Amino acid sequence: MNRPVIAVVDHGAGNLVSIGRALERTGAEVRIATSGGDLHSSDGIVLPGVGATATVMDGIRTGGFETALQEWTRPLLGICVGMQVLFETSDEDDAQCLGLLAGSNQRLVDAPTLPHIGWNEIDTVADPLFDGLGDRPEVYFVHSYAPVPVSEDVVIARSSHGASFVAAVRRGNVAGTQFHPERSGGTGLTILGNFVVSTVGART
Image 1 (tube, rainbow, N blue to C red):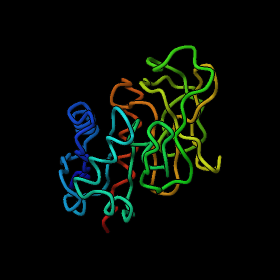
Image 2 (image 1 turned 90 degrees about the horizontal axis):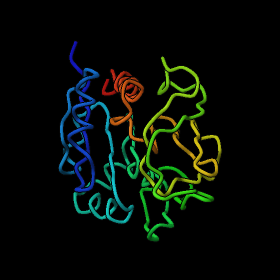
Image 3 (image 1 turned 60 degrees about the vertical axis):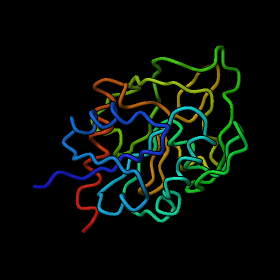
């Protein structure tokens, strides 16, 4: 059987090497997409991001990814800032984002330190992304902002750093993690593997 093809979006502000290696360990064929046109032949997309939402969105628009991502119907996983730009806006820099999910990104409230860096447990709901994981798995975060969705229905995981914040979301084929699965050891590989499994047959 052919390996699922996962496109990793290169918008100039993402950790492509570690994400690509982690996806390959799950059995995926990884292709680095440098333009929107590179996405069409893939089974799924991983949208990474580090830094600020405005910088990531600038790279998405410059690379011609914006419309392709907004029209995408197969599985899509946003990671860290790549998850934040799935929403409509960001308070970080008044950025206008992709608008695939309703809500905005807001600075963590009551946080003892910022950025929030390190391992935290997450409280999850039943979702294919977390298949095979036990209760309250630990994952690795690096962030100062997190999305605040309009509807709690899209929230599939929460964590806390002074106060509760959204750690993962899903609406249909669009999913996102505020944490970095590629830096979260075996737990992260399981999550990425579950995403790759969800892409099997996506083009049929």
